[in-house]
Image 1 (cartoon, rainbow, N blue to C red):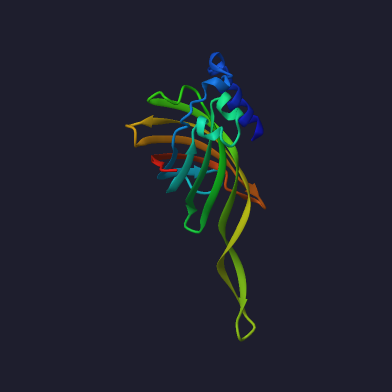
Image 2: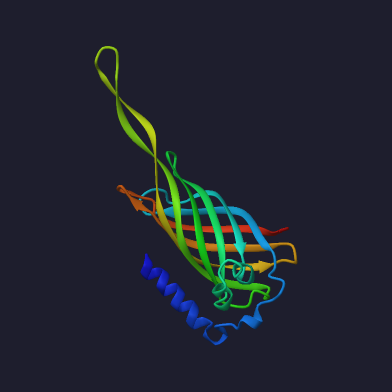
Length: 202
């Protein structure tokens, strides 16, 4: 997992080596808006579904805005993204996840089309079926299916683009690989997201 993250960061550094690091004088006085986006996500996993559809949401802090939390993010053209999604993995399995992503932009965020790579940690809540034996009045047991839940850490890596339709609307799309393998439950897999973001008036 960490090898993939390091490879993505290395590739992004090589792709924009001539533009970094920035000077503190480059940081604009107006850091721009925070964007909130919602969209659909679809994908598959290693052990379960081939393709299912769910929903996704993101709060996007582009580099100048993200530098209010950590100054060096602007110097390296990196933003912060709070990302969440929910998707069934089959009729009895589901994952709800939340992630903190470092988004490395490969061009200036003032461009109309901006490509990026991103990676970060997260946490996931999964549900899965189990078989339990229920004992009847006569002492006989009957196997019955029930649902159980589990929570554990997860990691996400991916790439994508943001496209400014105008000053108010941004279309974005991502392709992600999520790692989740815990207690013999492997929910690792890929997913594709498409959404629309608008500024938050903060």
